[in-house]
Image (cartoon, rainbow, N blue to C red):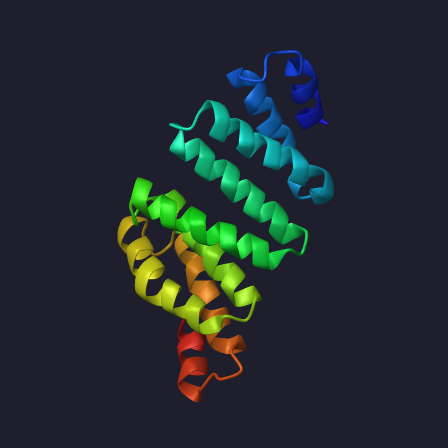
Length: 174
């Protein structure tokens, strides 16, 4: 309801108005989890607006891409979401650096999607060698992102059909 109210309040503004664009993003985010079919065109429009009128706002575009990828994932379009999550993670690394919390969150989303698509080896490599060491160093071992990365690694170790006894022991240790 709040997303629709925000949209209704600013719909009359020009397309290039920043507040109007924010209202579109808020509406898309509000719909994403509960009504992803309705959210998808809103989030696509939000991303298009940001690219058209604010191409220099790289962080904002990354956020819009991430929201769109999450929506695609909610719709069961995991393959499309994975392609976009790869782009978001790579751009976040370049723009923010590997140790930035938003980059680590993008990496977590990517690793989770890889696991959901049963691409366990790639997920484990990403978490074990890139994300988890950096999260521990920059965020700390008890921070939520770090804990979720641990869980993602443990899931990848356990659910991989090729898991070994050592993998199970490592997962248990995590």
